[in-house]
Amino acid sequence: MRTALLWTLLLAACDGKEDDSAPDTDTDTDTDDTSTPSSDEVTDPLSMPAEPAWSVDDFNPAAECATCHPTHYEQWSISNHAYSMVDPLFQALVGVRQADFDGASDRFCLQCHTSIGTRGGEIVPGFSFDELSPIVMEGITCESCHKVTGIARDYNSGHEIDPAAPVQGPIADPVDNSYHASAASTVHDSSEFCGACHDVIEVSGLDLERPYREWLESPAADEGRNCQSCHMPTTTGPAAEGGPDREVHDHRFVGVDTPAIPGFLPEDEVAAHAARVEALLTDIAAVDLQVASMVPQGEELDLVVTVSNLIDGHNLPTGSTFIRELWLEVVATDTDGNVVFETGTLDANGDLRHYWSELEPYSDYDLVTFGSGLIDQDGEPTLFPWRATEHWSAAIPPMYDRTVTYFIPTAEAAPGPLDVQVRLRFRPMAPHLLRLVGMDPEAIVTYDLAEATAEVEVQ
Image 1: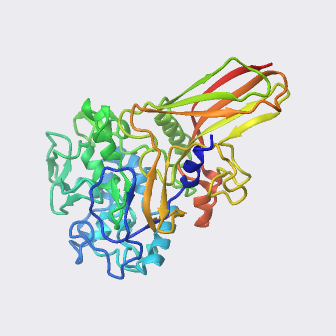
Image 2: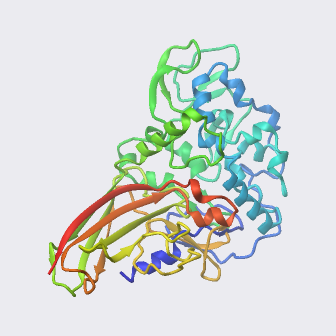
Image 3: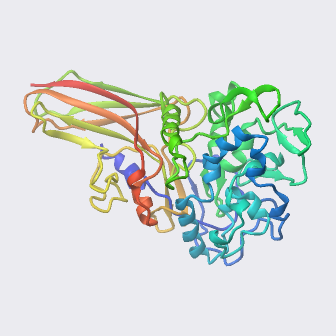
């Protein structure tokens, strides 16, 4: 399957570039001829204002919310929203971006990871994570969301935030309390609310992440189901201590990532978190395998594999697809146990054998992947979005499928049944990315989303 080589060359790419954000494009492949970082500081009147929009002291830390909202606080505290600023991978990537732009683009990634700090003046050129105030390091903390009063755009920290506003939420009839004023929100229960940060357009205009726009074109949107229905499932209980029972949302914001910092998840939450991720990934994809029941020895065996995205709300994968890895592993062994064909297996470093393999680059000619990748101005894969001028994608749209054919040689196969094993494998990030920034990739979890097997007689 030589045509699969193009996908292989471009996969794990996540190297990007910068210039000035805005073009709202729906294409999967974007190009831009801006390839040199600007010396001017990147600003945006909403999310990266030239002058602070407020003081970070205008916001309450999450611990103050815990008194009346202990369940929501406990859930948030182990979520990736709470992890967003302490994440060592995020900090390492910000460090590379800081060096590339000499501080001029330091606020771009931080506009979503800490809207309070970025709009509040703490995120300045050359900032250090070690010097930020505690509430800024809380990342996407309670009032980052619950002081949102509107949505100005559906990407790049597009929320309108007012620290003086009542606490906003989707409850239509909030109960008055002595601590803060409350108000019903018309936006908190919308997918647009999520898209305002989870859709990302680079400073150069390069389209990076687009789960919200994927949702807009999805069956889930047609049926009126929002992002929250999967990632913030509801239960019945009080929204605050002593309040009436109502429908309340889970604030763990379950996704595919697992915090890498030892101890971030309490010991009794490690297994529970893993189970939640497993549950989220269960039955989201299918693999169909079509192959003849017999092949004459010496002839090629055609293996037709169809991969289906069973998620009705967004692509598979979605989000930061340029650091995700989703691929097909195919292994055929003869009756003596000899491997006669393999693709999608890993090198000794745990990497796919594509461009980013240090040990066996470009050695897996049949590799098929379904993520995306970034290409720099020289036509080379890159791992940093601000250096990229092109973003290609092979992600599968919701409820769609992709079919690929493999050609398996049988000249060296022993007579007898040939065992064919196919797995659709996924991991939230690639080992080579972590090694690049000096992190240990050992903790990366690989999930088998779907599999299929067949037995073919060789005569």
